[in-house]
Amino acid sequence: MKLSDGAKKILNDPEKIKRRDEWFCRLQNLFDGKPARHVMAVKGLCGYPADSMILYTNPEQFVLECLENLAEQVDRRGDDETQFVPPCIEPGMYGVHFIDSFFGSRVYYKKDTHQWYNDRLTSEIGTLQPPDLDKCEIWQIAKRTVYAFFKHEVTLPLFGLPTIASALNIAVNLYGQDMLEAMLTEPEKAAHDFAVINNLLINLHRWYLSILPERQLQPVISWERTQPPGYGQICGCTTQLIGADVYKSMIAPLDNELLGVYRNGGMMHLCGNHSHFIPVFREMPNLKAIQVNDRAAHDLELYFTGLRGDQIIYLYPCEGMSADKAMQITGGKRLVLVDKINAPIAAC
Image (tube, rainbow, N blue to C red):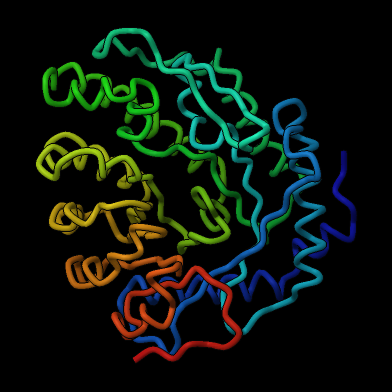
């Protein structure tokens, strides 16, 4: 299985790579607190095959078709002066349940909802053991996607990781409400399982960092949550189910440690009511960006005024928080719009 000459030429185009790296520099300047003339906007391209389920039976074919599809999109789209349009592929295995399967949880897909689900573990909280990665089938598939990507020797596309998530997200996937109760009634047992999960997540990120070029590695939703090279990402969805004190004492140190695997720290994804954690977020040195969408986006002003001056906000505009309203709140400072725009938006 060989990438076509035309696709390979497009995905190694020196001018396109130069343009991508110029946008990376603009993003890094934003993270560094340097003034910008325009608000940063990101809305990239992601290549997928017609049948994405071939990922699980033939990951090499999946990668090949992703790259061919992506080359066509890049060729049609061309460069964009108004926003960063990074070209990406992302083998998103098992959706948000990728890690669940490592611990023996059954993961399955429902065609009627187009979603992945998992069965909870029946083992006692506090007894979770590190998985044997050599016997983990989905991990072998994940590695094959990386090796296949390397085989085609393309230097323009970004490679998005599967959803490695966070210790709290995975623990609640595995044990549901029982884990939330254990955090209050049996904190030592809960802490044991959190540590086992977080150590696995750290090891997986370190493996990807040791294999993929930093300039092409991006965490999940690579085409919209694109960060400069050297930044990681965790999922904070489940934090809204616990109190700020519990998060600060039990989870924040793990999240901060996980982001610290990357030389520049990284981003936390939020999609619900998480604003009561802002004082804790301020104290996490490795937390360099917050990504907000849906309900979390409504609290943009709280995040903008409450976070550190060096923490960036990625905003998905939505009903209740438009791009115009976001501009009124932020003046365009510390803001990345994840949206398609027709013209650059001037920053104050």
